[in-house]
Image (cartoon, rainbow, N blue to C red; front, side, top):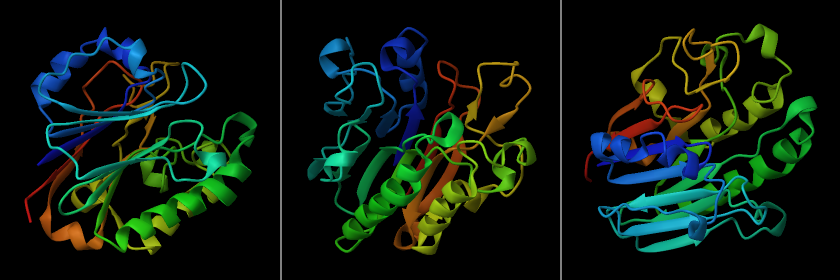
Length: 253
């Protein structure tokens, strides 16, 4: 089973930048999308191999949003976290499958001057982890998406100059520590311990060609799923967004 997560930075834009070729080439069983920036009725999307399509769009047009496109029919689908202050921006979809829950998430960015850091640290991160742990009481959890944090210094090119920038504050990194301490595994680091592996690059300063990036997109799993984890990697050469897709392959139970 191959799962791919990709922040496409606008689904309508990426469709014009080789999205269908990407899907045909990598052929995921389940594709999770973040930052759709659209409502489904605004998108002319033809994915015949993916009959199960679920969208969670923000109230604000052209902003945020998540989607799941699956070849496999989920047992159930749930949107958001059931907490009004979090549920207006289309940031979470939970799909239940036989052996696990799959959650795709677009974590709020703390923004320039850290305008949303308090909300992110003291509200969102806490409630999202509670959501994951509540699901885990029923069956193991996979969560994936743009978590808007580089966890360790190894996860971005210039850690020292970014210490108080959104995505690398101590508070945001502690939020990721809390996932790990709660028993979730960063799948990529199970296979790759080295530096220089990123999933997002600024559009400025030729950052991508120089590989001046951040690793902020993840697949994380409950410890109970570690035995079926086959591989996790980044498709760094796939263009179309300022993010690269991330992949997780798992064996059947």
